[in-house]
Image 1 (cartoon, helix red, strand yellow):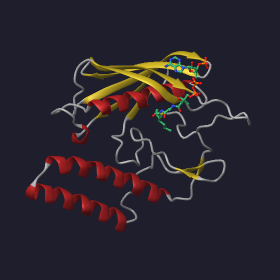
Image 2: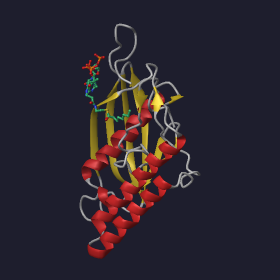
Image 3: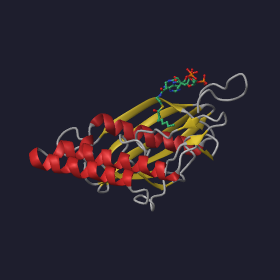
Length: 218
Ligand SMILES: CCCCCCCC(=O)SCCNC(=O)CCNC(=O)[C@H](O)C(C)(C)COP(=O)(O)OP(=O)(O)OC[C@H]1O[C@@H](n2cnc3c(N)ncnc32)[C@H](O)[C@@H]1OP(=O)(O)O
């Protein structure tokens, strides 16, 4: 995967154990989110108690998460500031992110994900706004992969062809179709069971160079 933070690769002063703990707690939060929406009564209480116990266990036993290699530990930028990878679609440390599994870079960038209940719009279907979020992020990633700096989404058009299902694997694909100066045009789709459910096209624009010759974002 590209260096999405676009900063120096110096690790921030956080132990690997603490980074692993943060990512584990994010995972527990995701399971809890689904549990709160699925269970009621005694079943709800069991789910909450089990997850609270699992966090307690991870906090009390330093060896509990020994085998986990943190995926998105904090990094230091060139000014020595701590930078977190906060991306709400890709970050392992952000409980809002599903997060996506990266499959390939190249002419096409591909990610896969199976979405749980907290992303539901209509019954068993993905919320339409989140369809746009996924496509925005993966097309942005394809633009980022094909260029040297950060670009911002200027325009995104989403076509909803059929419902995007929850609880089954989705392929989310993005590719650059044209680059011209600061502008990059990209397109992509979400595919479930071999069928395209949603398509997007969009324009990403790199910020104007600053007077010192650097971009103003990143
Ligand atoms: C680290 C993880 C991040 C993950 C991020 C995922 C993607 C995101 O969510 S990004 C956040 C959402 N997006 C934003 O907040 C962006 C908000 N918009 C902006 O800040 C600005 O509009 C910005 C920076 C995109 C462009 O501003 P600016 O540089 O002033 O643009 P501007 O000079 O008007 O246009 C640049 C060029 O694009 C052209 N252009 C603008 N709009 C269009 C369009 N719709 N179609 C074709 N061309 C266009 C202009 O004509 C101009 O062309 P030229 O250079 O030939 O004159």
